[in-house]
Image (cartoon, rainbow, N blue to C red; front, side):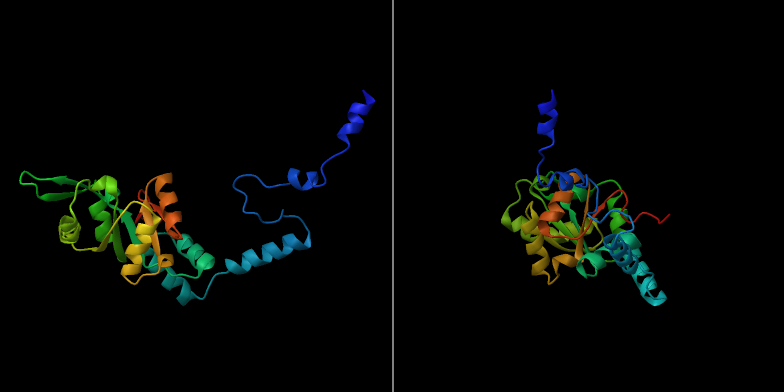
Length: 215
């Protein structure tokens, strides 16, 4: 019996570190104790979230309202990347239903209240023509798709990119002289979050809270 407990005393050199390793949801900051590391962490966090000058705060608030995101979301992007958001990307499959009419013409039907949300949006708007939304379009139909789409969205869409992955989003934004760090994705669910991460976009906004009244 005794030697069994003696064997337990022989532990891995890093066992203490492994036992203290933070779990899911931890932001990797130090524990909030009285150590020097904890004090430095709290000081840096307080400095980052220090209330800016009133004119700067007001400018950020107005920009957030125009884009339909929160002040905190906008500020987090500025803190993380230094970029200032100005545009949204929305997958076509989330924004509208595309179908053929009786004469094979293309018909775009906005989904639910998406058209009303787009009408309130005051930034640059791009649409990703993901493959699931538009099966069977020819190259010629894709080239002429933007005017058809804008008839449903009151001319608010600046450009359409074709594809289903991050590089398709990057190519669309690059073709329109917009750094990808300045755009965010309007989506629904984990699949769209993964899509935004693959494109290097700094934020994914759930469509259920996009342009929602503050409060």
